[in-house]
Image (cartoon, rainbow, N blue to C red):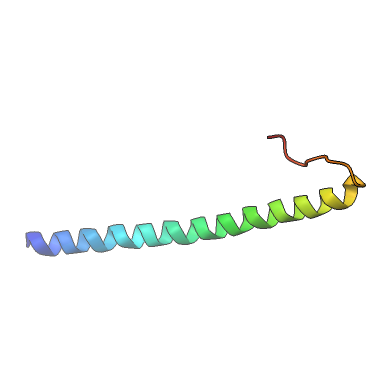
Length: 56
């Protein structure tokens, strides 16, 4: 009974990690798109200046 519970616990943990990684991939893609759009629009609006759209 113990090994069966360990296998079920491992399957649950791996399923949770897989779901979390999938969500993090979508979040990363959304952030990348927002960053790229901000970079493109700021570069078009800068008029040749060396301004940045982020505050780092």
